[in-house]
Every structure is written in structure tokens, then in C-alpha cells.
Amino acid sequence: MLNGGGRAAGAAGDDAAPGGAAMGAAEDSAGAGDAAGSSDTASTMPSWATSGRALFRAEGLSTEGGTASAFAFDATGVATREGAARLAQTLGVEGKPRWEYGWSVGPQDGSGPHVWLSADGSATFGYNDPGADPWQCEDVVARSDGGDDGEDTEPACDEPATSSVGDREARDALTDVMRSLGVDPDTFEIEVGEKTDGDPSRWVTASQVVDGSRTGAQWSATVGEEGVAWLDGFLATTEDLGEYPVISPAEAVRRLGDPRFSGAAWPVAYADEEAMWAAEPDGNEPTEAPAPPAAGDPVDWPVSDVEITDARLGLAQQSQDDGSVVLVPAYELSDADGNAWSVVAVADEAMDFSAPR
Image (cartoon, rainbow, N blue to C red):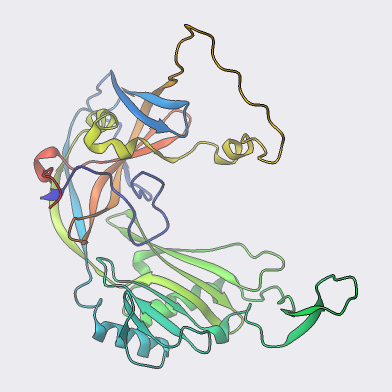
């Protein structure tokens, strides 16, 4: 049984949203079928896409449950001293593995390539090569710090040139190293960041896809003129756990107000995130202290009315008490404006709600 009592959270990548499940590109809409009509569920958790707290209502969502596949990461064969040695050898890092809150190989003072491997449930690792780092200072120049006498100087680097690395070259740099480490890039969705003026490198990400859904687990690379300068990823294999019972989309909406799944009340996506941040006041503008309420005024407790109109079933990462990582069925629940919340879809009978051991 899966450990319950909490939200699904990202473990090996950067897709985990604050307080919510790491939902990727969920595959099928679950809004069809027998409709639940409209049902309400209250949540006292803050909701960033709404005004403070929210009352969630399901509209037109199916009341039918079903089954869905679950998976787990297996890091036992790679998150070891021997695994760190193999990783270092493949990446051209000299030295023997030493334990430094994880397996570490190579110098950490910037004098040569270094790799670090975590003994966690995903076997996450990080690598950097100062020789390929476009920001690494080689030709240091002395510049004035602006003192009155003009004599006080400090070393500084010349600005590196805008990267000439093309999209295909950046993509190949990441996929080639993935293959060299025994990872199939065809099971990932590769995205190359846009080239910007003044940036001496290209940013590439690879998002894992399992059973048609992104899992939130990622690889990423910073690629410069001399190759990969920075690399992050995970080496755990993905194992099939079989089919698990899942709740209906309508029940998933009710879970948004269930204290056992209260973390899922945070939105994982916003309809207009740019507009949301643009509405934030300038912190440097002078403000006046608010006046106190008058005697007898009601206490502010804003509750937004959120109507969930769409449910998509995908996968989310969940860390177990023992540190292992599973990929469990999870719903992405959206309102008509495109704001989204995520909640674990595994049925109660397949979860372990016992207190932490």
C-alpha cells in the first residue's frame, strides 16, 4: 500500500509546484461519463489563484472510479559507491568516490570536473566542468571600482560572447550524455530554451514521460561552446507497480477539502500567471499603515467559489516514509479560467494512513 496522509510532491525534478503534485502532461480527460452534477467541498487552505480560501464545487464531472498504473523509482543499483565511480568515469571525472552527504568525485574548488551522486530514492546527481563553463574566468582584467583616486581595482572577467550553439547541437549534447549513462532520451520530452542576446550558453531540459504523462522528474544541462558545463539528472530506473484503484473525478474535487490531502489545495497552475505577478505592488513604493476595523466589524475570512469543470488523470511523484519514490495516479483539476489544482487519485483502500513510523 502507498503511504497516505500527504500530497504528491516532486522529488527528482523542477516541475513540483508549491504545495501541489508534480503533474505533467496528463493524458486523458476524465470529465466524460456519468456526471456528478454539482457538489461542494470546503477548503481552508490558502489558494493563490483565488482570494485566500476556496469552496470547491464539481460541475459535470464523472462519478465513476477505475484503475490506473503506478510506478516506482529503483535507485538501489546506482546510488552506491560503485555507481558513483561508473558515473564519474563516464563523465571523465578523475578521483575516487568519497562520502560527503552523498558520493562525491573530483575537486570542489573549481580546478577540475566534479560529480555528486545522492543516495536518495531517485539517485539524483549533479555534474559541472569548469573547463566548459563560459562564465569561468581565464583572462582576468583589472577594473576600477569607481574610487575617487581611480587606483583601487579588483579583478573581473570580460563578458562572454553570446552563444553560437544551435538548438540541435544543444539538444544532442544532452541526449548524447544521457545515452552514455544508459538512459534512453526517447522516454523524455526534450526542450531547448530560447537563445537570448548576451547569454553564452544554452539551457536544455528533458522531462520524463511514463505511460503518456510527465512525471515531474527531469534532466537539465547548460551547454556552452566547449560542451556541457552543468548537468543535473537522476539515474534510478522506473519499475511498473501494476494497476491501482483510483477515485472518480468528482471524489477528487471533494478531496481538495479533506484534511488528509490538504496540501493539494494549492494551485499547481494559473490561468494568467504573468498578470498575477504584474498585479503585485511595488515593494519600493511608500505605503500607509492600514486603519484598524471598527468595533463590531466582521472578521475578514474571504472564501472564493471555485467550480471545477475538468479533470485529467496523470502521474505525480510521492516520497514514501523510507525515502523511496513512487509515481502515483493523480488528477489535475481545472476551473473554467484554466487555474488548476492537483490531488492524488489512488483510492483510500490502496493507501496507508497510519502515523509516521
